[in-house]
Image 1 (tube, helix red, strand yellow):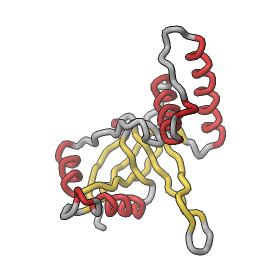
Image 2: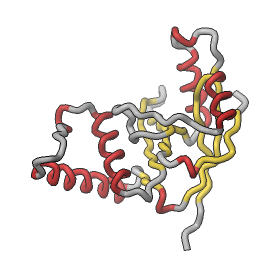
Image 3: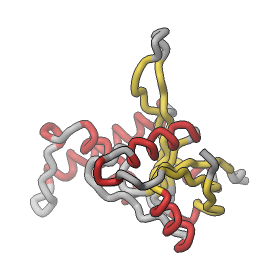
Length: 178
């Protein structure tokens, strides 16, 4: 019998947007073709990463005078709902699935032409995650730990992100104190 997992996700944004999210009890999913983990609502596993994101957003010229904010949510899901790309087996499964799908697309005369060799790394990741989830509807969220820098001591800085593509796993939206 599957065991429900419970995680907390942190979403960095502006205070005015946070108020609308709480009022509507809804996040507007990102849908750009450069979203690393595909279309969906993005969360960080650690609050500090959401704080950093929110502060960068607030410091952009178009957002001068707007306050940063971090929301936290409960993420409740079954293990089979998660595509965990930190798991080498699941990452290989995704890669094999997309490779096989691309071969099928090449042989189909009616399929759209997709040229992953000219796409950016972000576009390839986004395409792969979106394609896999569209054909595996049980996947409700995708996660991966990105390496984004080094500390002055030479330690890797990591950032675990979670992309929710099915909002039924999100509950209890609340503001965090910064």
